[in-house]
Each structure stands twice: as structure tokens, then as C-alpha cells.
Length: 368
Image (spheres, rainbow, N blue to C red):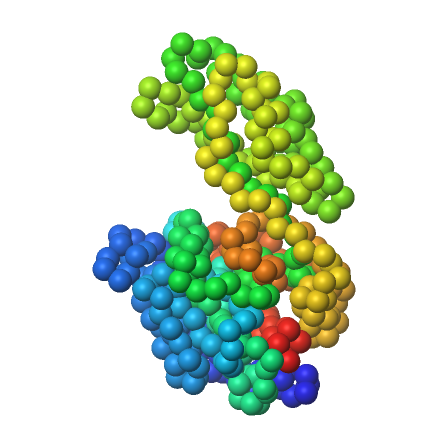
């Protein structure tokens, strides 16, 4: 059956690429909210297009008030959820081709904002499920392909979805890397601030503990480390003013061995009378490497690619931070870095096809 699934995915090559190009040619950078379009006209158009394609493929679809949509195959309450996103970051400068052209070069490489992050991969997931549907494979539980609309600017789409729908019992987000990612670091933004009575202390603290130190937080005593996640990383420095206060923000990518409360307490112990506050936090995500979900996805990756699928961790942050019971899985292969969010964002057609085959086997193994 697995070889039949792979062959069925391959037979849909032309229509899959055609439909991916329809979606990536829509400018879906967040814009002004409109009635029924909480993230603007372009994002809504991309969601409408993805759902229209899913309708044409014969899926049950639902648009949840413009915040998120999904295509479903199968019946039942407990479902496998696969969540990607259709919103994209601003295009920036340096493009060789128009950023929403869906330009395909002579080597079969597609250039377009969102082709990797994340329109191409989520549409590959849709076509992976379509192959299962075409073969009329009966699944033990339904599978939903969820189309997010606010991953790049705040996860308000997922918050709304979870206020209306139950979470999946397992699944993945195709918005990271291969092999399957069993753990994500925590991510927090911490703000150090003061009024104009302690300006010298404030700048001395910022210079000593951030600008003139290593980015692992060693001078602050927060250079926590574990064998799975590695060492603390500090980045994203930002100096700004809020009313009568001067503020310094730092983003922390922290391992699972420590809690954010412990980190804040330690920073405050060094900051003296300066104010230390937590402005955002997403706790680490961690699954056992040999659990059913991770093992199934590892097997799917290895069977399609022939490469080592030993599960890994990431310093990045995905929907897995907020959507229960899912892991990051693909779409970037080892060695593919620095592509998304940059000019001339690209993805090879062959990689899109390989993704779809991996994802189809992943669905089959999780839900057969």
C-alpha cells in the first residue's frame, strides 16, 4: 500500500504544482483588518483560494470566520491535524523576479515569497491527503489540513481556532525542518526598563550584560544548557522608549532544563533596582523520541528519502508552541537554511514532491 500511495502522489505532480502556484501568486502579507477578513484582503484571498482548491479536490471544508480554514477527509471526533500557514512576511528588497510571480526557472526551482514559508509545504500536505483519498484508504480517524493565517504576526488565528474547535490528538506542522523535530526550545521576550533617574545604571547594565558579553547569558548566570536543546541564546536586542521609561528588549531561546520564572529571577538578581518584566513567553515543546507519533514520522521520512531520520530539536518557534499534540516536520532538508524570510525565497519542485510523499506516508502511518 505504501508504494501505491507514493505512486499516487507522483501521478498528481502537475496539478499539485499548478495549485501551489495559484496560492503563492497571491500577496498575503498582513494588512488592514476588514469585516470577515481579520488579517486583510490578501490573506483572506489566499485562504479562499486554498479552500476552493480543496473543494475542487472533493474535501469537506470549513472557513472559521476568516481566522483559519481546513480541509478534512474521514469522519470522527478525534482527528490528526496538520497545520501550516498562508500568511507571509513582507517581501523586502533584492528580488531578481517579482516576489509574487511564482517564477519557475529552467531547473525546476520556484521563486516566490511564501513558496517555502509556508504555502508550498501546506499545499503539499493537502495533496498528500488527496492521494490517500483517491485510493479510498479507510482511516481510523479523520485528518484535517489546517490553513493558518497569522503565524508570522502573532498566532491569533490559532487562538481563535482553539476557541471554536478541539485540538488534534496528534499531527505536525510543515514549517520547520527534517528529520522530525521532537523538541522546540522555549522562546521569551524580556524587557529591562527604568525612568530617567537611573539612566547610568540602565546603560551600564545593558552594555555589561548584553552588548559586551557572549550571547549565551553567561554574565547573567542564565547560560543554561542541556544535551537535547543545547545552550541558551540571547538575540533580537531592541532599545526603545515607552512613555517616561527607557526600555531594552531581549529575546531568549532557552532549553527545556529551566523555567522562564527561574530565568527572570536570575536576571532580576543582577539588575538591582532596574525593572525586569516578561513581555511574552512560549514554553518549550518536548515529546519522547520513541513515542508513536515521532516514530511514525521518522519511519515515513526514512522510507521516502533513504536518509537518517533520527529525531532532532530546534531553536525555532512554530505552531507546535500553541497547538497541543503536534510536532514540527519538514519541509527543509538537511543543509537547506536561510531561505524563508529572505529575498528570492525558493523551493525545488522535486523537494515539493518529496515532501508530499513523506507527508502521505506520515498520514497513513498515523491514521491507518
